[in-house]
Image (cartoon, rainbow, N blue to C red; front, side, top):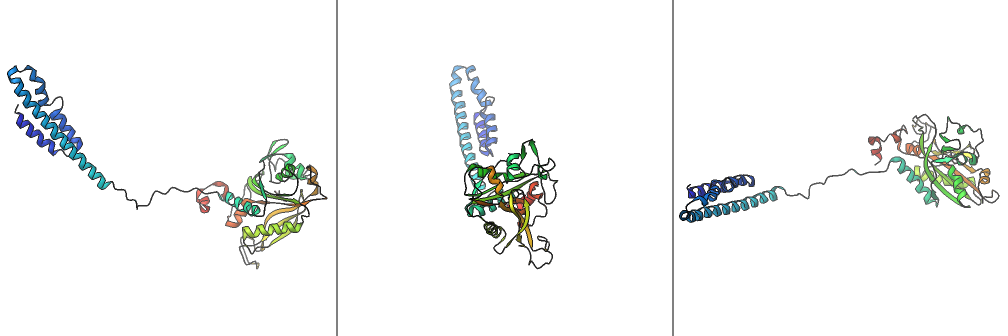
Length: 341
Ligand code: PHE
């Protein structure tokens, strides 16, 4: 074996290696276990002692020299690869970042908060009530006659003979009066359930907001003033309200409340919101029927009086945003809900 020729040929190959992987292949060929040089070193033992030493020196020098060339080339290649990466992998901090979609409240929730905020601003306390409630709270204590049609199983979801999915938030009136003496300035919001066939204005589950005020000397004028304040906060500062006689079992007198149309000139010309009426119905209300005080302790109808009102959150949302079908509010199609995000 011509060691000098081997070294110069291997050195040339090592120095020409283009990357770390190619260099490793060459290293295995010239310095690995099967490399001629390494095999020659292994065979030294079989040489006669007088040749062994000189040959051993020569082969070991050759091996160290090649190892040095490999190390040098490896350092060089690594340095070049690092430089290349530093040049190309530059982070451009001025590029726009990856935007993550932001969550938002559903329109029903936004509307619920907007309305409750108005009553919180009036000084009302916000309370909660159960969605599954006793017939006692949902009907009996709210002065519904035993034969009242809304008690029927065709109108109301019964869990048991005496337990229903509440059909309105009015049971919270009784629960609130039970919980403590007057005065009461209370608002509550939550889901209610009725066995309605879904259509553009009905869903079997909906959201109601209830208000109850009981104090000394409360009159229908206070109710009207309160609802006027509410209507102006939610539908615009120019609004007026109108009370029309109505009936609810638990208020006397009872009224339906209209707000002046916020969509048209109110001159009788066609309007999709008020149908040319100039008024839009928004809620039901009335003076607390004195009978109700008989179901709780500490409320003397000779001493206190009160008013209550109830309104549909989906209806308010639908009116404010011109939503043609309230079922859209429950379908959770992001193309719809995203318009309010
Ligand atoms: N609970 C009535 C309803 O669901 C609304 C209402 C509430 C009426 C309070 C008067 C007073 O229709």
